[in-house]
Image 1 (cartoon, rainbow, N blue to C red):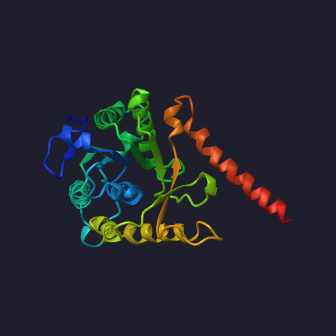
Image 2 (cartoon, rainbow, N blue to C red):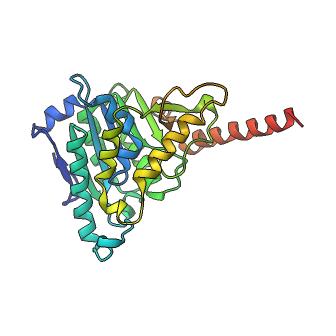
Image 3 (cartoon, rainbow, N blue to C red):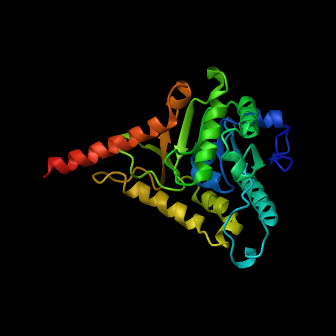
Length: 282
């Protein structure tokens, strides 16, 4: 398996051949940074954990060189941070029993460039080999520029495949900006309450982020717990922890759909709901 960037890394925890790892992968996450996978796609990790007929694979598109750093990482260069984060992501792949972990090592500015065909080519090669049933990626209302760029490159790569080879389901999951604002009927509720110790262990691997000044481990778990409790005001909680996602599957069933129009329709429905609720009790 050859990728465009010379520092790209393909890690297969079990040591099998790439072809075998690809065949075993039913759930795939394409994310921008190291630790994004463990935040947004834990649903898929847990679904596949210790199962014989399902496998979870991860793809990190950028090199992660621009991360926050404090404490023991305060004086690390960008190159040192890239190496540390690569090893952290490999460790997460071992703990989570991933079928494979690809780190494509593209600079964020490259991914943000719509003409960067090498990024789309890398993703297309992986998707063609894996042909996952379920794909997790960033949601189009995220406020992180690199996340939106990765989503766009991912959508382009998926649309480059024959329809029969595309994922059956694609979920855009919350990371930077949650999706609690979606109408309940628009939310995809991904239960993330299985194997809580596994979830904690996976995020705990990323010491460069935690010690570097960002408590993603606590923040993401807190949001998941809050999602479950504040889901329905009239019923008991149906899960202990939830991630909200948008269903992006229509975007790969119909290539003519525009991502911005598709996303703004969610906002239009929220606007209408707010207006009608105020008017109802005025």
